[in-house]
Image (cartoon, rainbow, N blue to C red):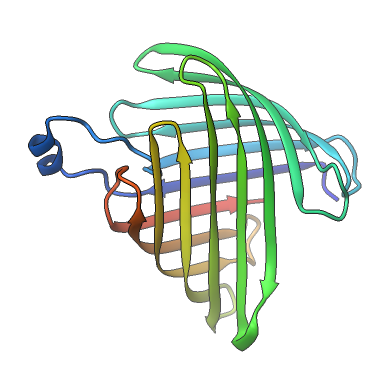
Length: 219
């Protein structure tokens, strides 16, 4: 197993309309908006049942702009169970105001699982607690089901759908919708571009229904 791993992503989703803000007089809560991030992991051994150190940097372009740097340690308590436990310290900045926020989380991943008719399911579920001035428990996750419909020498095309959701103090939502994605697996850095249309089933957080685009890479 490699000792180092890097994962990065850019996620775009249009924000709330000015009409909604003007009519209500209050800025709605936001959950699941545009974000860019990168995670660097360093395993402490080469076996599957291993601890790892990591650092993560995320930033959101929406107003008010936010950024967060996290440094932590994680590991799998049981080698055959896809569950990770993580403990980290986050340094959160919003509008020039900085706060240190400790966090604990349990992350369960659903590895690619074959379904009937050539489908594949992937997903994750995580829950935890973040301290600091706006301390909150949280839970979020997604489940995606897709099928490969075309392939070339350099790319694969998938169609399917997904469910995305999460809740924390003051904000929560549950979305569902169709998805199309392209994987480029043959280059030095595997890439994935996904285009979703997400419909809100529950919750009152922004962004509203609409397109969501994710470009991700990992190696």
